[in-house]
Image (cartoon, rainbow, N blue to C red; front, side, top):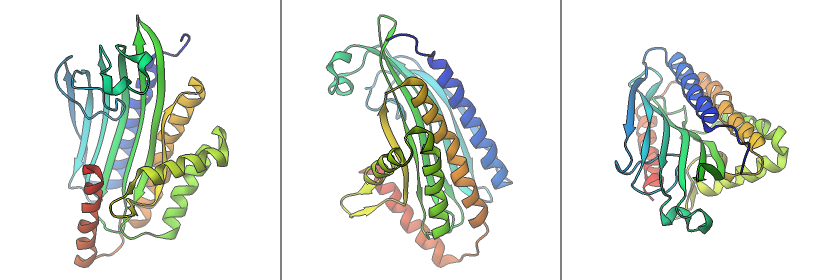
Length: 266
């Protein structure tokens, strides 16, 4: 598998995306700033819950930067992390579906975020974009992109939900249009469904994984999803961040956040 752009091209986009999102969130909040933790992990240094690596076992190398904003005027807590992790050997659990990759080395880069606003009328949101490569003898033998964004309102407004999905639909237009949008919207709805409660986590958005048709086109789609997140999210922030609310709405927000945590646990 030859003539792929260097993975550092994807890495550069992702670190820039993290920077742009942090700048926008700080501006929207108006008071709080992100703190930053730069971390590294030597090969064999333990397990990492990295958004791009799936289950790649306990032996990891690499690093990243985690940014956290707390106790802002708009955001109670907002976290966004960039990771670049690698390993010398894919574990059996990661190569079970593709046995030809057994024993290959790998590298994964990604950005993942979760934002919890203070106002109950402003939804919680999550997004991530990621890229993975498997290598053997210095040559890439497999690669894929994944990502998406989803919205979890506690008090849904039709115009917010329509704007969210319209932005998602529009960014899909150069990549298969309605067919791409419908497929990745459906995937998102299914992925963020709490089966034991028979309910969705929120109103959905886009979700995709293992996208490996054409590198340039798939990379462009991942960038469109990453860039489209702010286009989808910031207008909702501006509309809802100052909506009057009281203790009743706050308690319902905390109750529904429990469902959010529950999804991540199950």
